[in-house]
Length: 351
Image (cartoon, rainbow, N blue to C red; front, side):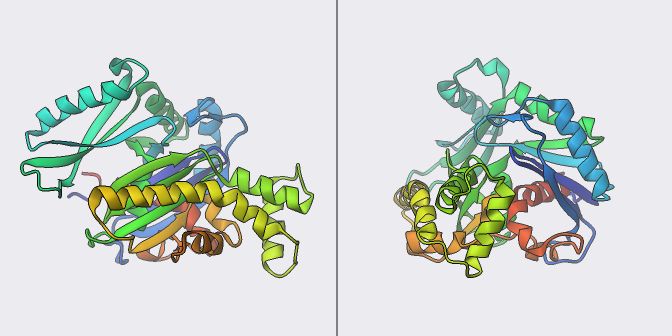
C-alpha cells in the first residue's frame, strides 16, 4: 500500500470540530506515523443538524481558523459522516467477483433506504470469510450515505482550504484508531460517547463486526448532573469542571447515583450489542473495552461503566501508538480525538 507524507483527519461533530495532522515519514510505533498537530474548536451554533452540515460556510470558516491556528500545513484531508446519516450493514454473500458483490450490495442498500438509490453513494468492503460452516461465503460490509451529505462535507473542507481525498463513516475511523493493527483475532469493544449520540462498536482487529448508534450522549449525563448539582442551565464546560471538582473530593450526595441511573439505558444497549456479537460469531467476551469521544473526559465515566458492565473499561487513547500527543495539546484529551486520528491514519495509508 502506498503511504503519503501527511494527512489531516477532520471530525466535524455537533459540539466540536477536531483535527489531527499525521506525518507518514516518522519512526513511531504506528507504522512510521507521528502526530504533527491536534486541536479542536466549538462547532458554530446551528451548523450541524442531525448529522448533516446545515451551514457549510460557517463550518468552513471555523475549520479554516482551526487549521491555521494549529499550524497545520497538510492539505490532504479525510472526513467522515456519522451513523445518523449513513447506512452500515454486514451481509453474507457468495464468494464472487468485486463487481458482482457490488451489484448484490446495491439491492441490499435499496431494501433499507427511505429514498431513491440514485441519491446515494455506497461502497463495499469484504471483511472476511464467514465462520459458520457455509463454504464459499464471505461477509461484506455495505456502507452508504446520501450523496448530498457527502458533498456538504467536501464543500466544508474546500471552504477551509483543504483537499478532500476520502470521505468515510465515523465507526470505521474509531475502530482504526483504537484497535491493534496486526492482531486480527483481538476483539475490541468501543463505546464512543458523543454529545448527542453514542456509537457501540465491536471489532476483530480493525474489522467492525457490530455497529450500533444510540440516541444518548453527554448531554443527558450533564443534565442528570446539573439536576443533582442545582445547576440547570449552566454551560457544559462549567458542569464538567464542577464534576471534576466532585471527583477530586467535593461530595455531592446522590450525584454519582444520578449519573449511573442516566447511564442505565446505554448500558442495556451495550450489553445487547455484546450478546449479539457473542451469539452471531460464537465468541467470548471482548479482550478489551474502551470508551472514546468527548464523553470519555467526564470524571468517573470509566469507573461507572466498569461497575455497570462488570468488566474493565479503559480510556481508548489513539495517540500512544502514534508517538504520543503533540506538546501543544492536552495529553488527557486523547480519547476525544479518536475519529480524527483514525481518519488521518486513513489519509496517510490511502493508495
